[in-house]
Image (cartoon, rainbow, N blue to C red; front, top):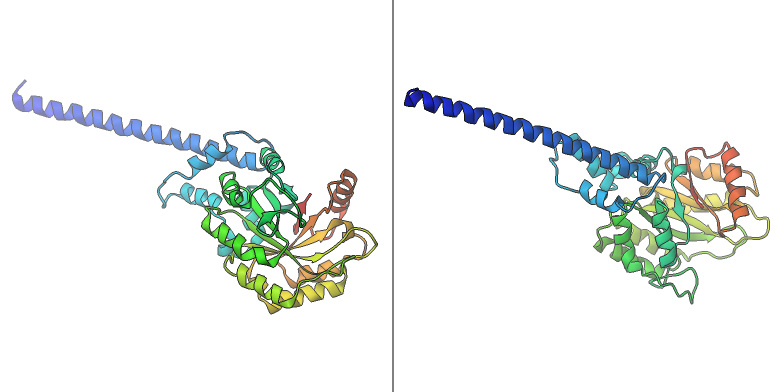
Length: 326
């Protein structure tokens, strides 16, 4: 074989080796993508509440790896990690459903009044989607004198790490600006619900001052994608229902302060929900077609929970527009 023939033969062998290397690399990348997609599928199954494994957070970190932005699958992952669907579509319900991978709002699992480290750990272990924390005086607590071992400062990062939503039930307007600064400085990118009671509701004479409501509107405007949970002060006992006058007063405030620029939900105490006709709440939902109701229990009694569950299961009202915070 001549020198020229040897050179050609050598180049041919290198070409074959290079081709085999490219094919092997393509096969390996395909296998990795396949495993990655299976991990994401398992992660989404996990978020639906069927199971909860310790590797949940490590899968989330894997999902955040750098991928080609032009890849469709990459875009899908980004939508899982960043709660921006409402901003794109204006459809709050679909945004929440897509983020958590559930079939409907009623499939969301909540942890109500998660005001201690123990309750937070139990909530995360049980695969809740959203946990609620009461905030009073820059601390966790429902009432003055509460002595919680849970620090608000750690909550945004904990929620972000576990792909959870947070509902802050703000008990005093003075804490709100500080609380929103805290969220803004964190890496939290999931659903943020900001709850505050504005008006007198069933069995209560409490209400916020007009200037406090104006301050709430000003502060929350910093987070246009946050979900505002606008409620009534209530107290269990008596037979007072939600009334049409209560709904009209809330509608007037929402319009006055442009709060409907946010996605809205209205928290409703289950104790008072079925004490009167449904016309009042229908009026509220007709006025705000994208809004929802968050039905909550003021206590943890099983009989109250089971009663509310049975009634809601049989109710023809509000289908597809209810979140169950119990």
